[in-house]
Each structure stands twice: as C-alpha cells, then as structure tokens.
Picture 1 (cartoon, rainbow, N blue to C red):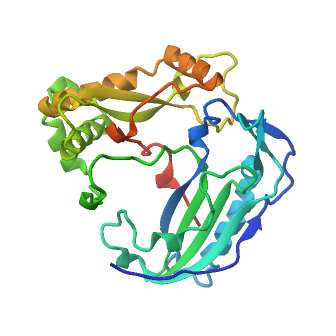
Picture 2 (picture 1 turned 30 degrees about the horizontal axis):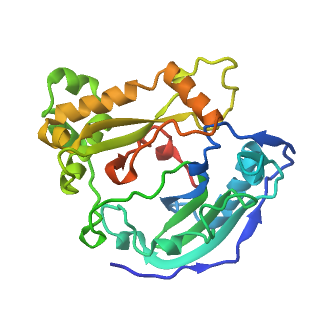
Length: 332
C-alpha cells in the first residue's frame, strides 16, 4: 500500500467575501442532541487540470475564493457555537470569524490509492486538518478544510465540520479478527438480489431497502450473535416531505429534519428467515416515520430525552447519501 506525507501550510481563517448579518441562531431540537455534537469528515477527490486550458490557477486558490463566496450565503458556518442553560442548548453566533483553510501538497498519484477508489484510503490522516478533540465543538471553527494537490493532475479536498454522526460502532467480535472490505453494488448485483425476493416486493423496495436487508443479515451471521439475541438495523429518514406542523419550515432552512428509525429481530429469526423477511422489516421501519412519529420524537427531544434507544453492539447503522447532491459537487 502506498505511503506519503503531506506538506501543509499554516492554517488560515477564511471569512465571508462580503458583509453578513450579525445575529444569533438557535439550533432546532433535532440538531441540539448531545450525541450529535461532534466533527465529522468528508473527503472528495477531483481532477485539477482541464485539458486544453493553459495557465490554470491552483486548485487551492479557486477553492479558497469559492469558500469565501459560499460563506456569504451560509454565513452561520463562519460563526461559532455557544452554550446556553449550562450546556443544555446550543446557539450559533453569526460572528463572521471564518473557517479554517489549509493548503497541502503530496507526492502521490490518484491511481496509487488503488482501483476502484474505495475506503480505507492509505495515509488518510495526511489528507485531513488537525481539529483536536472531535467532540469539543463550542467556540471553535465549524469547518476545517484542507485542499491537497497531488501528482498526476488530481487533488483532494477534505472537510471536517460539525455534523450529525453516530457513536463508534462496538462489536462483540475480537478486533484482531475484524477486517475492512468495501463492496460495490452495481446494476447486476442489485438485479441478482431483487431476484431473491417476491416480485411484488422487488418492485416496491428501493435499492437502499435491498442492500440494507442484505447487509443486516450478513453482518448478523458473521458476528455470530446468539439466536435469541435481539439485533437491529438503524437509519434515518428525511421528514421534510412529511412536515405538516405549523409554522412550516421557512424557505432556505438548512437545519436537519432527519429522524432515526429501527428495524428489529432476533438473530435466529433474521438469519433463519429469507432476504424478503429482512427487506420487509426495513420497509416497515422506514414507513413508521409518519407525521405523528415526528411530533412524538420532537416532544421527547424538547424534554432532553432519547426517542430511539438501541444497543450499539447489536445494531448496524446505515445511511443513504445518494440523494444529497454529492455527485454534482463542483470543486472548481
């Protein structure tokens, strides 16, 4: 596996390109949950040079200028989180203090990461900014971005920002026996999985439903849970389309409206049953997120409670980012 060391510049603050409102924004009860107060990481790889275009500016310069422009519209990201009520409530002070930006260079070609490009990436820490304690978010920049120029006309951009993520997954299997593998599900693989469930379910189930049901069964079998032990798969559902409360969500609202839901079964039922059984459990959990479910969850959050309790060592967390627009992201 390839190894390399990135040569980094000193961190600098990037502020909005133009004046922005100075105000305080309260976080919603969804975004204010204690378990969600942490930084999470995104890494994007992209081609730096456009063929046939001479004298192109450095990608890091383009990204830095674009970041300053974006902060005009998403100006709370340039602010800082503050605690109220002894830490029970967070607010964003829109101070325009800016976000952290680092330029870096690495003598590595994209092809050296391996093909296809899948995680875990080699030397991934060299692509990331240093943020310190990822669970310490108050009073710190909300976004850390490193733009790394690599050999062969490719760059990477890593963004470490305050976002929603779960706790580390704990398993009862020995870590020495665990391996990391990536699996790519293309049209052929999805078609093969769909052929293993009844036609009516194959037509109504989404790709996410099929893959989630499959991985849930495989993981449960691999971890050798006792047959009578309850196992879960947890994922979030976007409630924006189901929001019927008054007042409605304001235009441009970019807070989270994601609510978790869980499918449950005993390990024996899950592994002894069919793929169709697992997919049906996933579908039922997804359709459980109704307007009434959202209202109940919000009421519990407002009181500081947990509306969804699962044992992490028996739960598979899943997420679907295929509709978040990441495939249309233009890094310049």
